[in-house]
Structure formats: structure tokens, C-alpha cells
Length: 211
Image 1 (cartoon, rainbow, N blue to C red):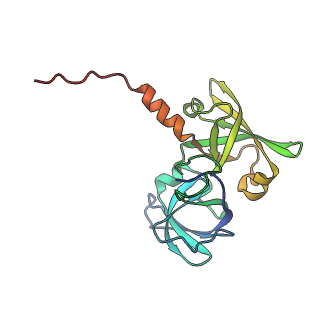
Image 2: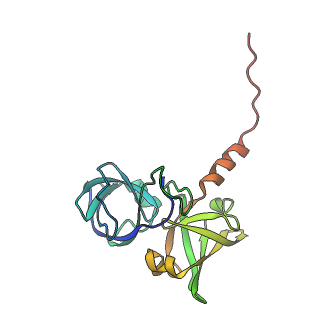
Image 3: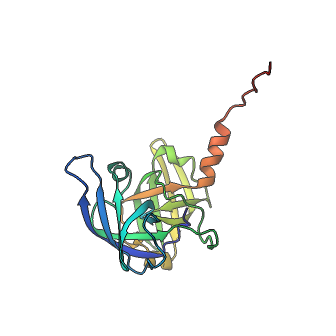
């Protein structure tokens, strides 16, 4: 579990195929930037652009993860070198500054607008129709691993567009600063919304009669 509070911006330095098979995944070697790896062990989880990955090798300043072809097909930002948002897995004693985040990307969104508004930035993202029902005014959403608050939601026949206000600090300390219209982003909907839908979708089933 994570909180969606980015701890550091690192950089994917190399992307190495794990085999010649086109279905093979890749190994990412990542410079951890300002993220301390002193308490990270092999097998621990680190969220990279909002996607939970397992550490398979590490030094004091960098770590490696293996990414399956399936994960690559469902995410963006892991397929090439570049800056990435990083967050270590949550401890039970940690503060939850954002919201409970699983690190499982639910779908990809497309940035439709990203521009300054006063001292802040307005970010608008078009989400797939199947994710629109989970987005609510003042609810939570994860964009590229960052826990954010939804300011507005507009549904239409092709999907859903939601807007977010980004304070200067968030823009400065995450990779969101690089977004522009047309950029694709990793989205994770609120964990509570996922369970609420599951509970509401179940019909009552009468218990089997005992002999």
C-alpha cells in the first residue's frame, strides 16, 4: 500500500529487454534521486509513476525492477528512460498524507488541458468511460502516482473529463510539471469506491436450506 505522496523524483536510466521473445518484459535500472534506499530490501515494493514494482537489485543510490509485458501494456512512463515519481511502500506507523493507494493502475487518461491559473495549475484529464463512475467531486484520484483531489467531473458519451488544481509545491516536486495536452497518464481510482461498487453489485442470495 501507498499514500500517493511522492517521496522523490528519480530517473529511469536504462531499459533492458529480459529476452528476445516479443512477449518478454524489461528490467529498469532507476536512479533513486533523493529517495533513501537504506531501509529498502530485495523484494520490497516501490511505486514508480503510480505502478507498484518489486525491487530485484539495489545499491546505495539506484535500484532495479522487472516489468512484465502485461504491465507495460497497461501503463505509461515505464517504457523508456526519463523522470519518474517514486514512493516506498507504506508502513503501518506512517502518516497518510494522501489516501490509501494500491499501486495498481486502473487505466490510462489523456491530458486535455494543463495551464497556470493564478499561482496554481489547472489539470484536466479525460478518463475512460468505465472509470468515470468512480470519480466524484472532492473525491480522490491518483495521477502518475500522485494523490489528488477532484475539483469537477463532466460525463459525456465518450467518457469523463475531470479537473484538478495543482498547488505550486506539487508541480515542483513531481513529474506532473512535464505534462501537456495529449500526454497519457496512469490513473488509479479510489480504493473505497472500488469496494463500494462491489458490495452494491451483489444481489442477496438466500442461504441453502439445511437437511
